[in-house]
Length: 162
Image 1: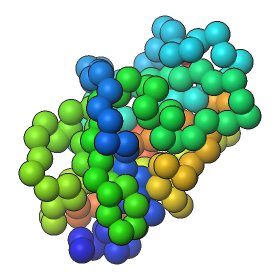
Image 2: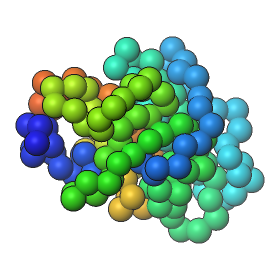
Image 3: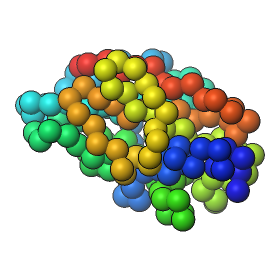
């Protein structure tokens, strides 16, 4: 396994659902989305994706309960993503069309998707995979596509309420 897989299996267990949603186009920076999916819901959670190039995408999803699971948030966000199941859980192979193509999920010495959770305006490295995360009002899942050699990946920009 890759060094970062061993060192951060929780980060790699972050991967997204196998269902592909409609794609989004990266913008120059994380910007508020004018309307959330299910905007009239009383609570909102966000997905922030930072590409290797530094471009970012942010999506918002409204929900009615106390929280929303990471899987539901990703599925409803409209961000295109692909995953593969491993012994440690699901791993993100591609998010928002990065990489554009792949023949192997998590190939050695190649960039990978690091996962973060934002709560209270601060990012923390995810301690579980995204499918085990429950987000509450104004929380966010953050994805950053980083080089395999990056031993301590930085989180994406904080979510901006839209």
